[in-house]
Length: 260
Ligand SMILES: [Fe+2]
Image 1 (cartoon, rainbow, N blue to C red):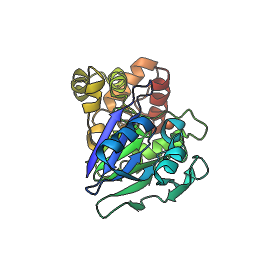
Image 2: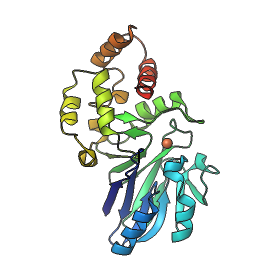
Image 3: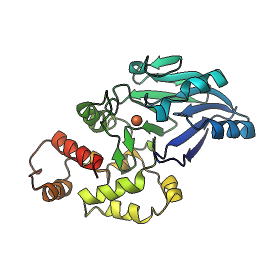
């Protein structure tokens, strides 16, 4: 199996992913770059069998209907996404497997929070995390169906139950900015300092690869109980975060990150 990926040169820095098996069956993850997808299809000769959509926001799902028509492909999304995506959607239950070919299959996991219908897809150890989890950060909770409580539950339990060696393939490349924020709220984290020193430009961001386990070493949203992080937060806000519950820390971090 092969994974093609690239970053859009827009302000949202969307990631585009194509999974291919040896028979050139292809799955597109949150595809919106129609021109580049067509260019690659003509050059490599793959056949688009399916689109997997993590959530309904237009920078992930906006081309699902038109690409479905173009390729006569299935569009897969979570059960709660029914009616939210402008395409003929095949809904998939939590932990259900989508079989594309004898070599290529994906599993969907419900990860509500960023939106109620958000899900992630796993294939061959790659975790396509949409706007749930980014390198060094997580998605916001500002849209209509977002829920801070569910996002917290997703990050601390649903994702934590998945194998730690899954490679995180996020919906956007925000690693540099997220690492700068991570350092702001946990200033003595050597892992963050080390990763940040290696990220100078967009190409470096593209090279940045971490597993779920590695994310927990520096991503502040996965380090809510960390004493050093709580001390920095207390210093920054003049409030005491040392004894509060993890959700209170999450709430403060998410709010700080949104206005940072
Ligand atoms: Fe989104």
